[in-house]
Image (tube, rainbow, N blue to C red; front, side, top):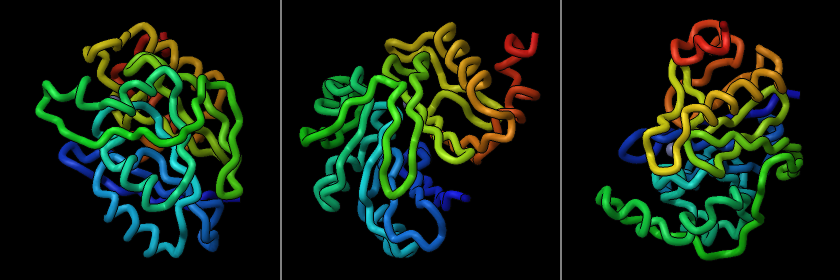
Length: 213
Ligand SMILES: [Zn+2]
């Protein structure tokens, strides 16, 4: 089984949104992190011939949730999000307004995740893992050799921890736990930049030298 993963780079800081299907023929898709441009996401869904049957959030930073309300309303898809970050999802401008950000909060129904759950959508079974550090409720989603890591781990970098509620120690522990849980060939689909693998980052990511010690 090989998931079909389409990557969209959206918004002012090129945040990755993923359209994930069980395979290339599947007509149902999960959308991970609809960060901006709901219309563009729907055009991409049309292009692959799939409808959105679930929306997953890795965390609540504005660049990952900017199109959530619009996409959820347009598709009627259920929303799964980190339980620790619901307030931010509902009232993002209270948290990010000082950055000049103005986006719509999402007040609709959602299923709250703490991590350690297993969820199924579009025929895909995702293992949910808590990965705090970049943001306190941050989650990663793993399915079929693919890890949707949000802003925890990037190709050659890691998520910043200087934002409110960030913690470098927690971030490093989260990445260590991912490395202990999943094989090196695990494909990492990050919140920014190109895909990589866990093994590649553990071997050469300059921020992870402590994990190699
Ligand atoms: Zn972030």
